[in-house]
Length: 297
Image 1: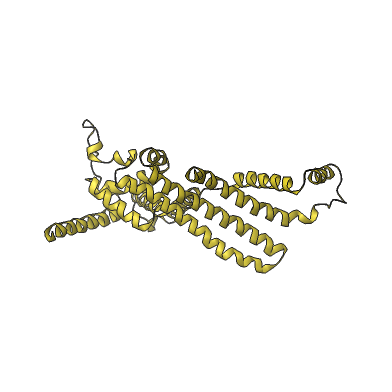
Image 2 (image 1 turned 45 degrees about the vertical axis):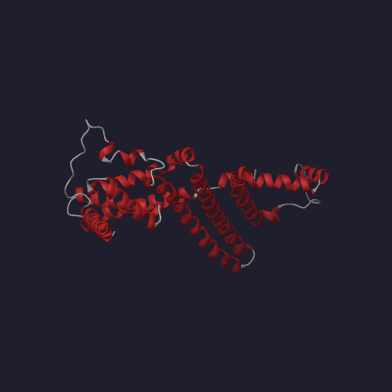
């Protein structure tokens, strides 16, 4: 029974907690302008009358419901924040390439290829932890024949992550439980961190400047939430690597998954040259290590 209640509690705790924090910030902003019971005029005097008639427990229940509604409206997902950061970085790359194209390549095509390659690397860095990224690179090198296709295939896999949650729930509910727990924790940390930062800023301006110190640990909590969101995506990647679920976009790059009548596209020389050289060296070292392991056995 407790297991069935946990998902519901996870859905409730984040909007309720941040709803209280945002309402407290609002109270600090406009609390002095709210008339007392003796000063209240119509229709505010009716509200005081209802509170007096129903009692404090009913007023608390109404306030809790209002906090939940406010929190539900203002809640953001940690994965959305990570993808927003990723979009901002990609915009920065393209802006810098437009302003100083000579620093990015000798031709317009080279500049575009460089920016596209960096955007795909950024997608991996903002969605996954470093250890899982390395695991995913090894997995892609083993599955794909053309090193040029490794980076595009990994970027396509990252885009598939949101839709893989439903597949994971169908295939392995225990693994999905780990993913759901990490996702809920990430959302809680990000939202509580941000809403408390808002509260600390309001309190520092209106009450005491020392309240601004509260924003430091809350900023760290916000960052930890983004890191936890990456760990949640790591669970999806491990499910892909262990063949629990499949990524359709990634499998489209795998030679064995392509229809026979559709041959693989020829490799284009010069595309993502700096990344291709890195992956080639990486795959060569991985092959040498595998050979040494077989000999040692």
